Length: 311
Image (cartoon, rainbow, N blue to C red):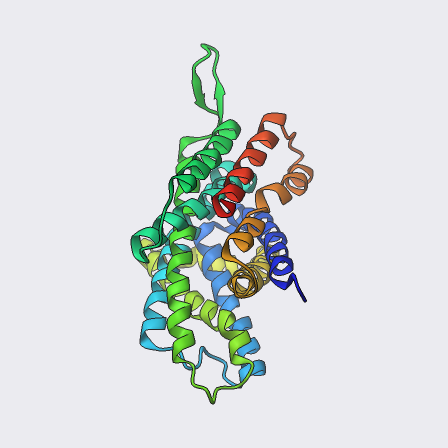
């Protein structure tokens, strides 16, 4: 299939849209920390089944110490820090604006690649970053009674959204390094399906480390009773199940697979369509009116993401 990578990227964008909608609901019902622990625990279970069926091992076989190190670091940055910020951002400003702020992930990813991998960062990339920021500013800034420019959203939610974009962007670069070490460690005699399942095995490593990170935070906060109550909430567990299947299991794994079949720039641009795809279902579910300024802001922000990779 000539455009397999592009198709996978669009599936990822749709998958993350579903994840965002149900993560919003789960966070409001059982709290961000419990939602993250439960979804990552379920993700480990589902990924173990997938790996067992495909390669005969219900764990990330052949992974080297360096693969565990970098994928583990990506989990701490992307899951524990980034998703903690994202889920709490949903509690403050909702999934619609939370996903808009996630368009900051590609610029943060480029800066991290420059700092960690030594990749070039041109002035054209800087222009694209400014366009992305302009789009976000159009959506979240307004004028008060005295005509002064001000935030139309709680500052806490905006800062959490920026933190979520930072976590995902840096986590993606660390995942890229970890997957390369993982790929190098796979022996020639490994099952043929191992190449296809490498993104899913990498995601399982990230889910294991991420769940341990959240459990540690809950232990420090003595919040286990809330986790126990959340696990008994059938409606909440339904939300968690859906966001797990469309998030860590399919969304994250397919995002790692997409860059194997098409350019990283094209894949990242298509996967970043979530803020566009979420507008109508979010407005329908929560009966919120979408203002023309917000639509314009999303469009400009998406143009910035596209420019960032196409220049």
